[in-house]
Image 1 (cartoon, rainbow, N blue to C red):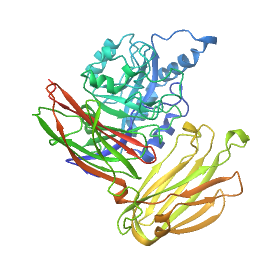
Image 2 (cartoon, helix red, strand yellow):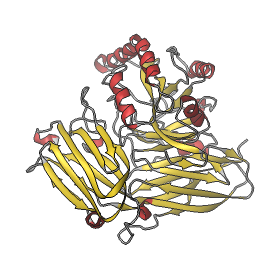
Image 3 (cartoon, helix red, strand yellow):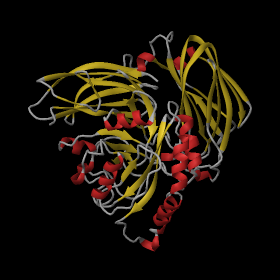
Image 4 (cartoon, rainbow, N blue to C red):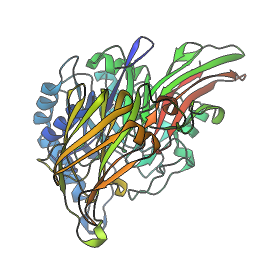
Amino acid sequence: MPATGPFNIYFGDIHNHNALGYGIGSLERSIDIARSHLDFFAFTGHSSWHDMEAMEGGREQHWLEGFKRLTDGWGHVQDLIASANVDGEFASFLGFEWHSSHFGDQCVVFKDDHQPLIFPDNIGALRAFCLERGALMIPHHLAYPEGMRGVNWQVFDHACTPVVEIFSEHGNSEDDRGPLTFFTHSMGGRQTSQTARAALDAGLQFGFTASSDSHNGFPGAYGEGIVAVLSADLERASIMEAINARRTYALTGDRILIDFAVDGAVMGQSIEAGAEVDAVFDVRCPDALDVVEVIQDGEVVGRAHPQSKTGLDASVAEPFHVRFEWGWGPWGDLALDRICDWSFEISLGNGRLLDCQPCLQSGPFDEDRRHVVRQVSQNTVQIKSYTSRRGAYRLNPNQSVVLQVAGGGDTEFNVTMTEPVPARSKVTVAELHSGSLNMRTGPFPKEAYQWHRLVPMPASRGKGQVSLKVPGQPSYTYLRVRQQNGHMAWASPIFLNYR
């Protein structure tokens, strides 16, 4: 893992669901998926909703039956999560989600195995339990209105809530005017007073996290949210220590690497400062960078763009990124939506594969199918996958991988496909430097696949330094990153002169 100061960056999902609750899919499947493309995860099954009102047609039974499934299966959950953890390789955490219309939903994440479920009817009792157990209590989908399961900032206490979830499949809670608005659920849009920005402006202190909240049993679902932590190593105690210290940042999906510090203090810290401080950042993206923004007390006070905005004139005689994407296919209106299986190999000639990053969507749901992305050598990756319009998050059916490659203009990418059709293709780096390559598996409306235009390193990196005036009252500053493809990241705030 790349380093930021004395820490490594690890990626995980600490809020997700399956059939042990009112989602779908087995916990065994969730663990398989998490281990295949994440460093750590917490399963947070739906547990209770003490102030749920009766719904039209008795629909509340859907929730009540889900709560019972988690309660009945809690012993099984505890055993599976404990057995999934392997120090230094993969960290698994036990947890549950507590619903409350009035207090706002909370995810409880335990530091230790074999912990009890509780069903309190107030947030004070839940907080006392978490403090006793050393557990995290993380509010999520913040921006829904208070009283409709949005966060209740009036009862916020950072004692066991060092971070809040600002992004998930619900959307973006940073601000009410930011991209990725709320629309996928029935609780309404974003309310200004509920956003993370409003709470920071009111003087609260917390770091940022994101997680999928996937109900399809798919931790780390691409585009639905993941969290990065700055941790000494990949063990549960270290991951938990990093979250408690707010050394976290939230991402929508692409694994952007962030170094961010103010006068030497890393993200999440609280420091004493004089009249001026220096914010320093170095951002490395797996796709083309649009902008890095330094935000202080709700205002953008500094911007940085990639070293080369288009990359068209940049040399390719250095490491670069290129995305291979597959899917598309007939949309639902044609009544031809189906699950399409894929099997292919990508091999390099005159180049070396440095990294292979899966970008796996949660849909379609299938209990038995698995995505397998396996780098088998320094120049070969093998992929088995499946795609469908059916159940696609925000209507995107596609899967992809981002390859980091060392090579030059004569580096070749060779694709040998056996499913859904036998096919071979070849393209050079020089060709992908100029434009994308699109291919089909058959006549319209069959599925398609694509090499995206490659991203030279100067087009994916933003670094800089911004001098910040420190006002006469407490001040916060954080980093926001946006790629050209719309994927984003938010580094936890650094707090200046908070008492």
